[in-house]
Image (cartoon, rainbow, N blue to C red):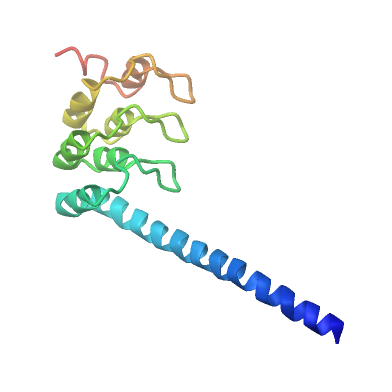
Length: 151
């Protein structure tokens, strides 16, 4: 009987912890869903949705599970107006993904040279190296765009 009471007492004590853990997991899942929606908006260039997220306080430099920011995503997919919006809202163009590439490098990879030029004038060090050891200048040479930023 004492064991039953002790077990019941432990169950009652742990119930709020289990409930709290469940709530945390639900919150984590909800935040993941919001993050996916935020990145989907960046991927398709939906500035209205991006602006609503940012106005509501969503972190402009949120990193997704692939190590990208919305700025990297918008630049890669060629959405110049989304890039501009994100920069106006304080996006950090210097953040590097898991390969060490920045948003400007992603734009170069996809041939989005006007976006790359826009990102080039941000306050990032031109000596940042990606994981392959390439600076931005070396990276542009690799993609055959040696004079991309000389205008």
